[in-house]
Every structure is written in C-alpha cells, then in structure tokens.
Image (cartoon, rainbow, N blue to C red; front, side, top):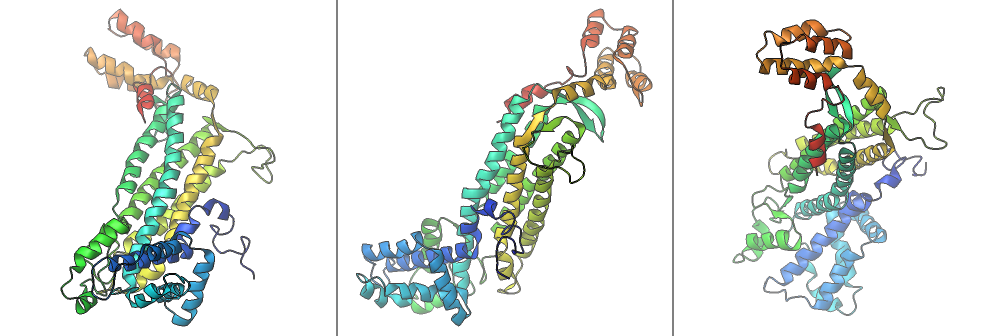
Length: 460
C-alpha cells in the first residue's frame, strides 16, 4: 500500500500532517541528517584552524562551499545519504562518505579538500556527531516551534484574563458552590503557572560532548598527544554549535539535559490538561458558549450539539505527548556500562512526542478562539447561590467577637437553598454596628469577588 496521509500509521503524518509542518524539517530523519552534516562540517573546519601538523587552514572558498552544503541541504541530499547507508548499514558513516563525495564536485577547491579528506570525522565516535546533532535539533525545535506555540497560548489567555477580569463567576470547590471569583482571575491563574513552566523549558541548557569513543580523547591523543583536545572540543561545542559542553561522559552524552527539557515540557502540558478540563467543565455549565461554524456537525444523531472537541483533542494529545516524554526522560539517562543502543531507537521518537504536544497547543488555541462568555448564565448562577455569603458574614462576626459565628451560619446555610431575604433577615438580627449591617446587606454573590479583578488585570 502506498504511503499517504490516508495510510500513515501515525496521525501526525496522516490526519494532522499539515499541522506538523513546522516540526518536520527539524525533528525528522531529514532533520537529523541535516544536523549531522552541520556538525561534521564545523568539526572539519575547526580542525583546520587548530594548527595541527598536516592540516592547513582551509581557504575561504572551501569554508563557504562546505557551509553551503548545510545551508542548502535538501531532501535529495538526505536521500543520497540514505542510499549510501544501504551499503554501509551505518547512518553516521554514510554522512561521512557523502561529505567526502561532495569534495570532488567543488572543482575550485577540489584538491585542497581531497588532501584533507581524512580529517572528516577525525577522532570522532558516531555519538560525537549524534549527541551534538540531537542537541541542535532540540534547540531549534524549542526556539522556533515549541516556545512560540506556548507564547501564542499565553498571549491569548492573558488577553482573556484582562478582558474578563471583572466578570464575576461562582467558584466551585469539590464541585460545590464556593466563594465567587472572576472568569479573568481563573484564567490568570493558568497564565501565571504557564509563565513559570515556559521559563523552565527555555532555561534548560542542552549539553553536548566531542570526546571520542568512551569520553577520554583516546584516539585524539594517540594522533596528537600534545594538543589540548578538551579545550578544543569545548570551543567547537560552545562557540560553533551553541550548545553547553559536558566534560564528563561515557561514549554517549548521558542525556540528563534532554530529560530535564522533556520533564519541563511535561509540566507545561499538565497545566494545560488542567485548563482544558476546566474549560470543558465551564462549557458544560453554560459559562462559555462556542461559536459555531457553518457546515460543522456536533453529533451524527443529535442536531443541537456543539461539542467542546478542541479541548478534548488537546487533553488527549497532551496525554500522548506526556507519556512519550516521560518515557524519554526516564529511559535516556540510563545506559549499560559505557553505552548500549537502547537510546538510539528511542531518540527517533522525539519528533513524535513534540508533535503531539504541538498538536495539543494548536487544538487548545483553536478552542479558545471559539469561546464566548455567557454573562447571563454566570449572573443567574451567582444569583442562585446566596449561601456563599455565609463566609463574609461569619468573618465580620468574628471581627466583632460575636459568639459562635461559624456555627450559626452553618445552621442557617448548610445544605439549604438560601435567598437574599433570608440572608438580610439574619444580618438584621446580629449585634453589629448599623453601618456594618448595611455594608453586608448591600453585598451580593456577584460583588463578593475580593481582589480577583485586580489580580486578573495585573497578570502579564
């Protein structure tokens, strides 16, 4: 069967393929090959500048042509590497051979490059190329795709928090009526949590190493025993590749920073699952209505339905993302002795994990864009919950040291439907200053929102 969006096993490459366009060049096998070429080129150029006997500094023409291979790396180039891999049965060696083959095509600098060809991949184990490539892939995906997607959500939620700062809403603790809040304040809570989670994602330093087969520069020192290979590797990793250098590794970079990044993304996703469920619930209560789209159907048999499908899709996809990210973070830092290959196949699923997270961000944003606040429903719900004023009344009674304030309000309100008139009658019977009685009697569930509006307006 021909591979197409209809026959793809993963919905990321099928039903949702168009929504994965930004990630595909970065976290696919093409993306991995692209970064491997980049690392091999930068290592080769750096070696030419190291002053090593037998390798003169490359000309500007050679440097430009080599870096041009990275800038113009195409699907045809990736396929050519894949074709070589069919013979080598080794994906990193295939990149080395492909790069050397390109030297023959650069007629102006062909001799210079071919004379230095054996310095391609010099001293490197495959993992020197792979771990730096994975670091570059994750760095680009984080910077160019994941953080911007989170920022769009944070921006949208922040705008909602400000717009709805004064819209009173009955809160619910344990599913029961509770002290009122505002719609904007509840959204501001999500924004504050997400801002912290975003900072953690952005703050993870992605580590990388270039230190040979078991992390000790064995081969490097065999060839050039008097050269400071650790300082050189640090310079390449930090200055030319823009990653953080890890001096202590086995054959693989231990992936601790990857795990830290994946855990940070899980935390953000978990916050958004919490919000998706709350939004779903508020739609169910009628607090939010959803804008309809011409031609859409909510149920195959119930014509009236407008399902909160975007919030449900977001929740489901965040769950998938978190399951994969959790496995990645738990598995990758573990390697038998100086290395085993269990990380190799697992790492190929980074794009899948990020893809489901991105799909969740996209679905949630689509859902938010459909929401309309149902002010009438919010007001009616508040007007039917006068019992929530038991809290401020008994607190004022405490201030004036009236006896058993909590117990007296409990008798009046617990498990009972309370009216405005019943509350007013209770207040009239209290031994309070008349000004305090008037203030309490003027209070309504809709006005009893504390500092909620100010907190919502303050969030940025």
